[in-house]
Length: 101
Image (cartoon, rainbow, N blue to C red; front, side, top):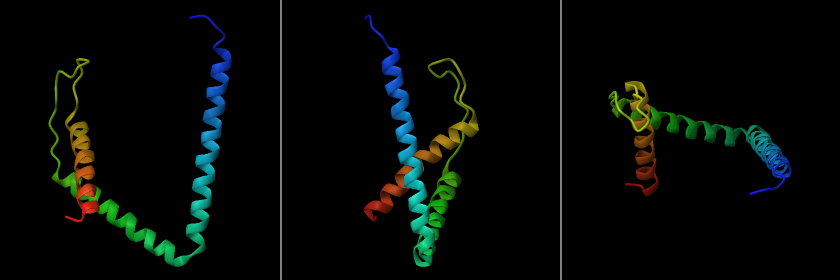
């Protein structure tokens, strides 16, 4: 393959800049809307507390096991293993809550 890849790199950087602007404006306007109404703010705190409770429950139920001999020859620590299992349990718990089981 031959060609000028500098132009492609410039377009990729432009895409990252546009994405950053979009994400920043979305966060700013959603926070402005959230803080403009006290009832919405109160409801959002219920959501955040519930989500944090799911994370704590999943972390308590998870076990950490040191895992040697990964594909790259490294060792996964017990703490890393526990956080991976916590993420999986969070997914399962949120799925169960979504399905209302």
